Amino acid sequence: MKVLVVGGGGREHAICWKLAQSPKVSQLFCAPGNAGIAQVASCVPVKATDVEAMVAWAKENAIDFVMVAPDDPLALGMVDAMEAAGIPAFGPRANAAIIEASKIFSKHLMEQYHIPTAQYRDFTELAPAEEYIRQQGAPIVVKADGLALGKGVVVAQTVDEALAAVREMMADGKFGASGSKVVIEECMTGPEVTVLAFCDGKHIVPMPSSQDHKRAYDNNQGPNTGGMGAISPSPNYTPEVARRCMEEIFLPTVAALQAEGRPFQGVIYFGLMLTPNGPKVVEYNARFGDPECQAVLSLLDSDLMDILMACRNGTLDHLDIRWKDGAACCLVLASGGYPGSYAKGLPITGLDEAGKTAVVFHAGTAEKDGQIVTNGGRVLGVTAVGCDLNDAIDRAYESARPIQFDAMHFRTDIGRV
Figure (cartoon, rainbow, N blue to C red):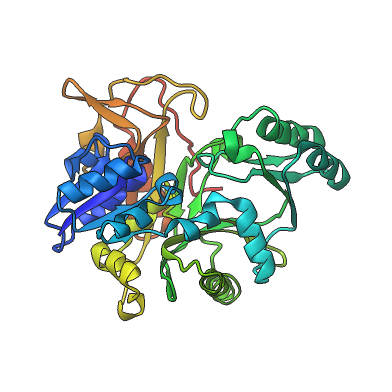
């Protein structure tokens, strides 16, 4: 099969790395890809959000299957467009991807179908939102309704911080149209866990749990990022918690979307908070998380292509999906200044040495004059598998030691907090 993966970050590198191992995949393409992806797939210079151009390229090149990985093209209906052109595609259609594209939609869905989540109110105007914040006090959570590169959530510790966040979103247009409407939630407490799950519209198969580390600095300090590292599985996700999540959250979510005429085929990301009152949904995403994907797919012992096709064809219940014993850790090496402004084009050294003991997934890289250089905020995801979590963490940090580029920064406590 000729397979096209849409996207160009660390998540897409992990997906391409896994698909390249499938005997069913004869040719692998990625659009737009990056310097690391180019080592396992042919990169195509088409923007991930250019639906029309992507469909045209897939048709011209007789692509047999398309895997749409990022949130934006899913929300824009790329899967719908591929299927309309007669090209089988993995990922939710736009009417199901709305569980990520609109936080207001997902909160209403959970409320209607009694899926446990934080208490909330949603707002389309600034003054009532400000008044609600003053009434509720802090800590309190302010969320932009739409897609915001994982940065549209502020956990405000004071009323002033919450008011500033809602003004930035609604009045100052920090996230454009995505922040014109907001959700304001109670601040839940407890360990956070991510569970990614394959779904074919009716059936759901959870993957091993994972835990992302969003804050830029050690001890969960600093601004939110797209993710500074991830581990899998999470020590907090016990068999009893898993049972409750399946019964109270996962199956009801799939059934709710089906009842609404929005059957979900793809990967559902369940962001969970393990509160004193049981597991609750923090957020849904409509695709693999990044960097959770890198850690979780490192543990997959089955053919990913088989799973993607089963999700698309509604036959997920026919598969026996196998996972490796042990654990995985993905350590993100980021550009100095990230998630704020940062330099690009800085030479990276030590990749070959690091690759001897771990898989180095490229997130923000490019090739310039034969040299791999930085080209984004999150640059690399050094991902190691170990016999247990501590072993995996130690291996990831040890493997990352040879890698260097100017102003590189990373957290030293991934999996330890």
